[in-house]
Image (cartoon, rainbow, N blue to C red; front, side, top):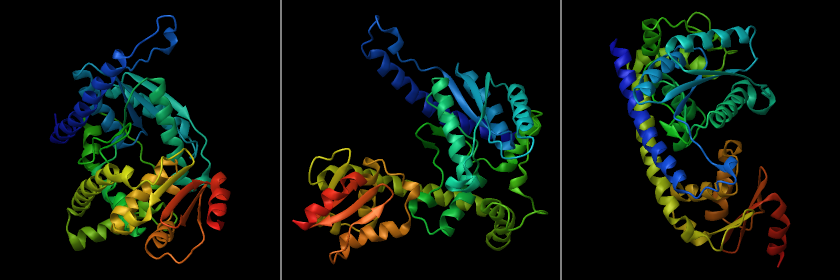
Length: 369
């Protein structure tokens, strides 16, 4: 086996062992729960199947080849879900070719899914990603698995960090993609794109090259921003800052991620202490005096926890929204409530109140009293 394969295998096995350890604990926990034999349909089963998100590109096919070896060694099966976004001509042929390569790579099951992408939601890329992840999570339910392994590489991580920096995002964005995030596992974040291509050649896997990714010879402002970063910005950065710039950016993501995780943990431990009353599904109140005593790096996490509690879609928030909320805490001069998507944030005396829209009238009446 090549050095690239051994490196990828070791990385994938490490992540898989972390997953299988958690899998075992959950299975044992479920088996200890009472089960009514008169209602067998309510029995919960979790299969020993690892789900792989496959596009047909080099990264995902290399993942299929490596994870099949890892999973089979540990008595697990592999299943690939291949999503047809129907956004390009002959996309169905691309899906069929990817399915064929998955079988060649040793994948046990293949599920092909067609999705409709509403480009108006978050643009072509964002909307396609949303539809794709929905398909992944539905497939995880179908296969009764607790995992979706994806083939994002070190290069993808570097590009993600640059996108976060360019958008003026905070630590969460600059820390890039996590090795694990819920059901999502990314074992290739220390593997380069060229190494996945080498693995595909080693296993005779014909990979698809997405035309929207562009190339050195063909790239302009009409291509997605990530593609422009890949072919226009990063080559310049390599020349100026060194050939290992992608590695350094990925390392930055890892270090920032560790700090961000630590701050999140501290905020979660203290969150109950700053709530002024028992929260409901529609309303949560935080103590402004405590928030005022915290630096913004901590208070911002309390704000996010409150928004998460009310099921706020964080992707719809802008930096300007957070600045307005900070003003309610640190520079309050009787400002009006802030309207967020489906939520309202208001300050009344020493209470910072987060409420779903239907509770907005309650806030206004309380302010008038």
